[in-house]
Length: 149
Image (tube, rainbow, N blue to C red):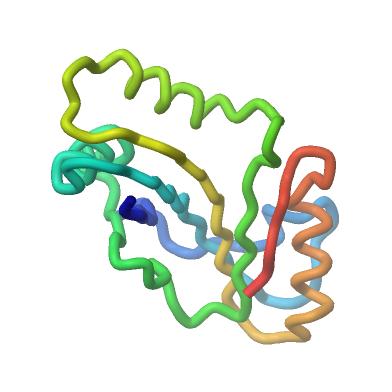
């Protein structure tokens, strides 16, 4: 089994005011940018799996993709990675899996798919306090799991 990763982000979006993520603004001058990280477990023809997933996950004109497992962006104060809890409805994941199931004769098997939202926060400040504040406002404990790096 092979693990494929695709961190997808906009070619045209630059970091913007991080207060847009918060319920109430903070005085710190922080910016953010976001990506989506897709992790797929596949068996069979891995090159065909990579090509299929790229065609489904990435719009090549407006998006870039990082496939080597390293973060797509750098220089952040911290990064929040969050995703839908197991058992909760993830509409994007279901759409991708429905597309996959509708294709016949693919030379690979998609065993698992995980979608993680990554929010990169840039600037200076108290990483611990700020990350707790952003996690509280961005992540919903009823449906999300998350980590901070």
